[in-house]
Length: 121
Image (cartoon, rainbow, N blue to C red; front, side):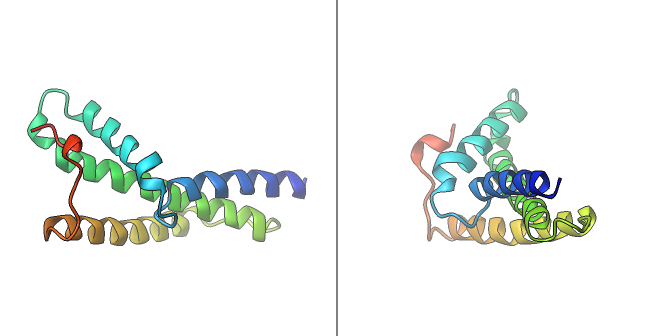
């Protein structure tokens, strides 16, 4: 049964990596489309909230990726020990919030620019 837990952990780790801020290419392929879809659904009647909803969706996809990686790493590395879900969630929230705040700050101070097609204004 240990091999099954390690296999499950490897899947969580791989999927989490795809959503996490640790891979440089994932934003274009995964995170921004997820954030855009989230914002589109959340702001159906209120388009002025589209950009903040996109940032929230981006943040949530990064949090999900970090937490999935922690769950997977726990299963792979410490397969004989139970994971601490609360601690993993707090670490994922903190690291993803810091990453998203940095990314939002770079856009706010015009160091990075958003693609023109991203905004519906």
